[in-house]
Length: 267
Image (tube, rainbow, N blue to C red; front, side, top):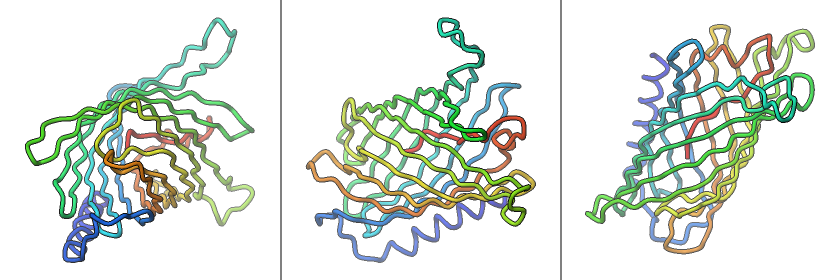
């Protein structure tokens, strides 16, 4: 709870401090920098199913927009191997169903509200001992409206993400116990374009630290190639610093199985 309150205060502070700055939303912005903050927590539905929720804030410089989002996904495990391939272990890790709201506060333009539905699946590929590649496929239905009476517009896209976590073991380097490295690359394919945020590719390395009480903190450096609107074909290059906070996800760090990345349905 303290971390969530701190997260909300930080997001409000950043937004308030930048309201008075000049906006250049009408200019041709090809390179920008962004700050993303998100708090992630879980709720157990039963012994197998987990509801993951992300509350996030995103700020872009030069001033174009602020974004606020809340997205939840239900993890449904899949533990049965495919008989046609005679596999001993399940190829598919789980299925995901999700929904969320994303509010975009635009400078000198109409604000945007998006309602999103998500259906996805993850399958894992063992690479080396202790290292697993997670492949995450999902379809998103995006329904957006601007606060100008223009009504709702729909968009659909397919996303593919491959990720892993490199974890240091205590017996080798005791002074870095708790540190790990999350790595991911994600591709976006628009089946029907939305009014905003039609991403192309995202590269996201990071570094994380896990406390003994299972709270985790991650700092990511992200590079995006993004098409922010459908009004033109110009892509922007986004350089992003992202701070992530996770509470109580001990299942990701079980000593009996490799560490698996945690996926959400974020933009």
